[in-house]
Length: 138
Image (cartoon, rainbow, N blue to C red; front, side):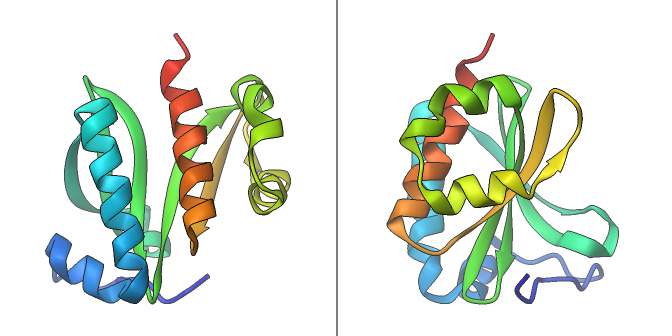
């Protein structure tokens, strides 16, 4: 886990969150554009999960939670819940990096809470695939 924005007393702007991410900011901006184009997502900057995770940008659409994105030093982390069944439908399409994270993620019965550090374009594409699968489930 990288350093996160944990000062609860100071709410960052999105620009400050991007600056904290360093070169990974371009990837986050691409993810944000994707959420706007595909899901007409709304977002809010919030402090979440006590002091463990810190400041995030929560994305949702039509009242349905998409994910939280946490600013980390020189990267960012995408955090969301996905069912085991949904994951299995796209397992063959994602990288070994994501499969390893899945294997070690928090299992809550029929679904898991997963968090992915996005470091490359490939990681970003994997996250998009997982989110798309999650969002198309009725």
